Image 1 (spheres, rainbow, N blue to C red):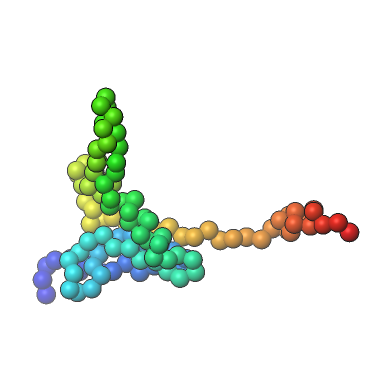
Image 2 (cartoon, one colour):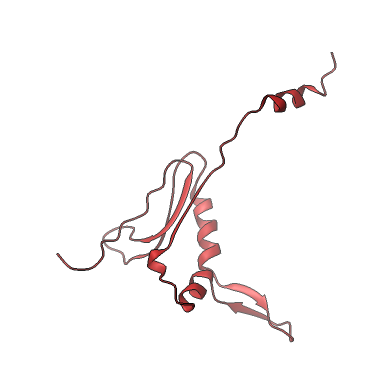
Length: 112
C-alpha cells in the first residue's frame, strides 16, 4: 500500500450541502468536491456554492475604474498559505417550524 492519503468523495446527509477536498471516483485526481443530500438540497445549491468559492471575481481597479479579474476565494486562500486539502464546509437547510401564532395570523383577514 502506498503512503499517500486515501481521498474519498464527500457524502451529504438529507437537507445538507457539503464541500470538501476529495475524489469523485478512482479515475479522477483529488480536487474540491460538492455533495448534496435530498430533502431540498440539490445540484443548483452545490453549483452556487462552488461558483462562490472557485470562480474569479470581477472588481474595479482604482483610479482607472477598469474592470479586472481578481483571484477566486480558493486561489486567494492558497496564496495566503492555507492548505486547501483540509477544506471542509457543511451547511444544512433550515427546519421550518409551525408556530400557533402563525396560524392565528392567517385567520386575521377572515370575515365571519
